[in-house]
Amino acid sequence: MNVVDLRSDTVTRPTPAMREAMARAEVGDDVYREDPTVRRLEERVAELLGQEAALFVPSGTMANQLALRAQTEPGDEILAEAQAHVLLFERGAHAALAGVTVQAIPTAAGVFGPEELARRLHQAPPRIPPDLFPPQRLLCLENTHNSGGGTVWPLETFRAVVGLARESGLRVHLDGARIWNAAVAAGMPERSWTGLCDSVAVCFSKGLGAPVGSAVAGSRAFVERARRFRGMYGGAMRQAGVLAAAALYALEHHRERLAEDHRLARKLARGLAELPALAVEPERVQTNIVYFRTLRMPAEAFAARAQEEGVKVLPVGHDTIRCLTHLEVSESDIDRALAVFAKIANG
Ligand SMILES: *Cc1c(COP(=O)(O)O)cnc(C)c1O
Image 1 (spheres, rainbow, N blue to C red):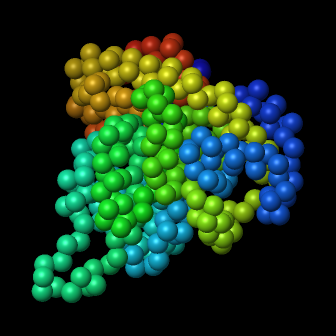
Image 2 (image 1 turned 135 degrees about the vertical axis):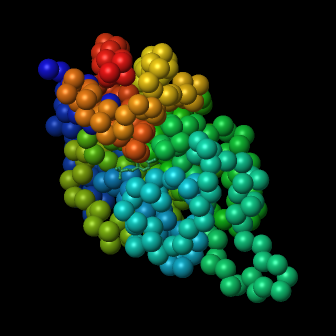
Image 3 (image 1 turned 30 degrees about the horizontal axis):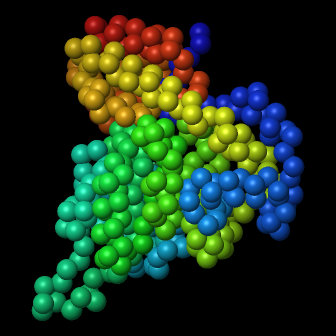
């Protein structure tokens, strides 16, 4: 039975054309900066993101964590949305490797305005010495916001928040693992958001379908500092051009098609909304992520039943399931998933 895997957009396998590009890649030792394909990828990414330079790294986690480490000192404070990937899904690296403390900003869908940021800025009452607080150094934003439901940051809100951060002396990092989805959904180039930030992390191994790889971009000085930490963290690679070639191929051929993933995610959400035993908010589906709640059984039981029928979904809470659309999910796969969900929901 052909399995429909909706757990994540990371489950895609490289296509035959992508594998061909990988096989043809010109390579060299990237630690000596002699891999022409890696350099081409880094230049292309910097250009797309409106930044001076970029650095190819093995994972999105490393991209984010290099940005945190390079832009803070141990004991500094970072500000991030409470469900941010950098805080929840990177194995505590912000604490263990960058040594930073956290000011979490709770939101409903991952996006907040300057008022919410303002409330989290340390303002010492007159009799408290202001240097008692950890220095607030870096604001981390996420676009699209994964736990928020694939939410796209409205550009004006983003601009206002970044503006206040800068006025307050903060640097700004963007976790743009799915910035490609945001750009396609909003019909605006990636750099509309990323060009406003000091550093940006992006992934090639999510919706773009590359097997491995992420990048972190920023000023030349930032990237050189990140390069030092990449080495320390064990992320300096040698003939990485075979991987960079997959990322370059993905940037060229798999960005526009993300619109199809978004269309199928909306279709999935509309179909789920018809099922009385499940709760979903289709109007919140902006990109390729759909969260829904199982009202009559635990999410774990629902996922197990679905898997028996050849549909894999991800339980992310006791009654919450996550589904993502991607390169290997077709319209008929969505029809089939909906039929399976209906069968389970109707008991
Ligand atoms: C996937 C993801 C990352 C990075 O994940 P890796 O698995 O380390 O590549 C970072 N941020 C967000 C929002 C993500 O979804």
